[in-house]
Structure formats: structure tokens, C-alpha cells
Length: 158
Image 1 (tube, helix red, strand yellow):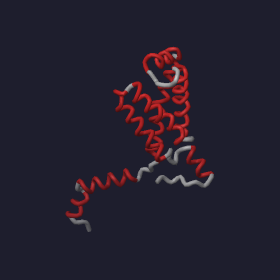
Image 2 (tube, rainbow, N blue to C red):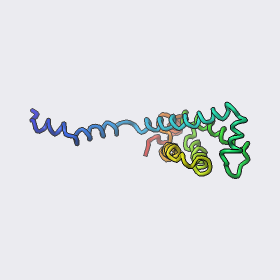
Image 3 (tube, one colour):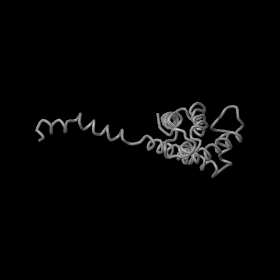
Image 4 (tube, rainbow, N blue to C red):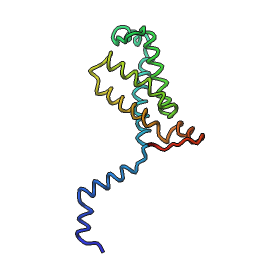
């Protein structure tokens, strides 16, 4: 038989917090990993699509506005566009995930340091998603995990 005291204990803010925390912790880490892959892939994919939509303008932006050091504007535009179109595909698939986030982290750093330093809140968000994928991997809902299971590698998240 349940007493009034037991009912009150169940309905306390602490009990509610523990219930919510427990339910949230039951969500597999692979779910936020998948969401992170899709979110960051979308950001870079759309940027790559914009670049190829008007290539002359893209090269002009790299030459006059972006001021990327070391590389000629045409080469910088080509590299950026290639990474912005190839890496998101790999991220959506969860294929070579840790490798595919590296150029995007590099691009984010270059954009932050040399192109749009005032846009640090966006770049911090990008870096957080990319670094999460770098250190935790793509999760179980990925080609990487499928390949890992085929070869007997653990797909367990640490």
C-alpha cells in the first residue's frame, strides 16, 4: 500500500529531475551523433552549392573579400568547394567520418581567423559539432560502424 509520503516523494522536483535525466540518458549516443553529422553536413553542403552556383563570383570573393593567405584565389576556391561538397556526403553516410571532419575543422579555423572573425558564435557551433564527431565518431547509425562490425571492431561508444 502506498502512503501519502511516498506519493509526495515521487512528485518532488528532485524526483521529476531524476526521471527526466534517466530517460534522456537512455537515448543512445548514436542519435545525437547522427544529428550532429546531418546538421554540420547541411551547413557545409549549402555553402558548397552556393559556390558552384556562380563560380566566377566565388573566385572573385576569394580574390577580393576573403583574403585567404598563401593560396591563390582559384586554388583556395577549388579546395573549399571540393571539401564543402565531398565531406558532407561522407558525413551523411557516416563514412570516414573522423577523417572527413578534419578539413572542415581547418576551414572553420581559416574562416574564423582570416575571413569573418566577428562570426565566432557560428564558428564555435561548427567547431563544437565537428569536434564532437572527431572525438566520438559517427555512432552506430553509420557506414563506419557497419564496416567496423563486419571486421569485428567494437562499435561501442566510450
